[in-house]
Image (cartoon, rainbow, N blue to C red; front, side, top):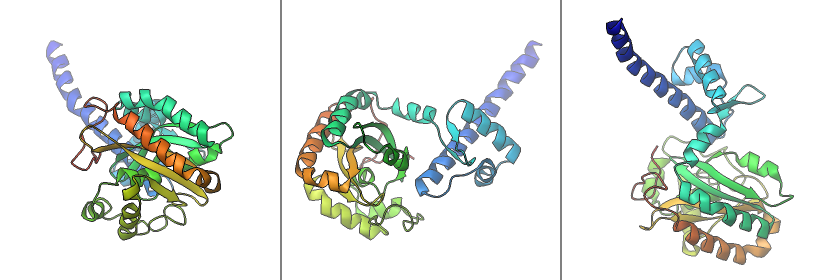
Length: 279
């Protein structure tokens, strides 16, 4: 019995690891689909995407939904659930602790939404959001927890230090046309030009880039070495924010400076020389 038990224990390790890798692949596929702006996967299409049997995909998806790493929408498509983002957020404890009152203050001051976001490859992940009373909550939902980096203020702020070559490599094989609002970048050249325009001021101004009529002002949050680790932004109706553009810029810069003090080696994942989050 002891021998059998030991043998069973040895065989469970690789099997468990394999199941974990498959679950992570499925979650990552759902994330990539969200970031692309296309219709989400249902279980059958997700199975085809990751290359596993549909029965196994169904069982794994059910388990991930029960653990809240995935969620099923009403149309049976999948999106990433709260447990995944809670786990991601736990990698940034200092930022999260300090960001809440800062975000709340910005939201109330401008009757808008305020966000703290990080980048993971081409994706921008929302860590925390606050909104003023009466602010249109559907905008926060439309922006969702995962967005593409090329058509949001936060995404462009996270790429503010990237060169043309680096952005070209990052967005290789991604189709920019058809994603985002009417003023979103439709090519790498347009994205780089927009950042070249905003870089001297240190504040990204994204008017209608994610959605028509919506403006997002964003600034990078840097660590002690100057690497971009997060983005802080204010989002709202363009006509409501434009009269306050100067004070919004000043407040965002000040808030980003305060949040920078919260970043150390334990508060954010390792970044490359340009602050890119690991894929």
